[in-house]
Length: 94
Ligand SMILES: [Zn+2]
Image (cartoon, rainbow, N blue to C red; front, top):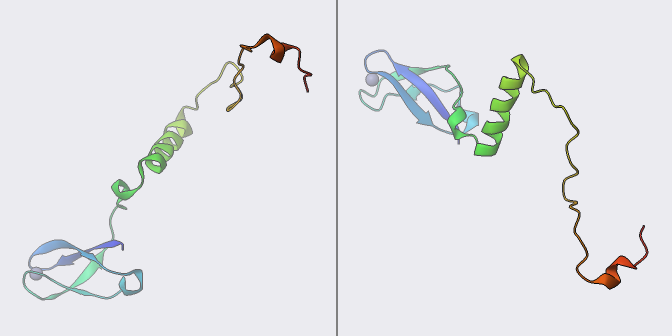
């Protein structure tokens, strides 16, 4: 469930966790029980999974200074292995 920030005119900001369908509704201040309005701030990026956060960071870094490669990357998942049995060397190759 997402977290929404509200501000009470007396007590200041506080967070409310509620379903998205109730995001536009006013919240009651937990201290003075006055109704308060929702305020919009920066998204809570700390809640993202670490892999996604790293990918977004890499995307922002590469926007200004893209990484330059000087050679082709290797093929993932295929490593050359030497045959340990001499009979394997005589097998037909694709
Ligand atoms: Zn209050």
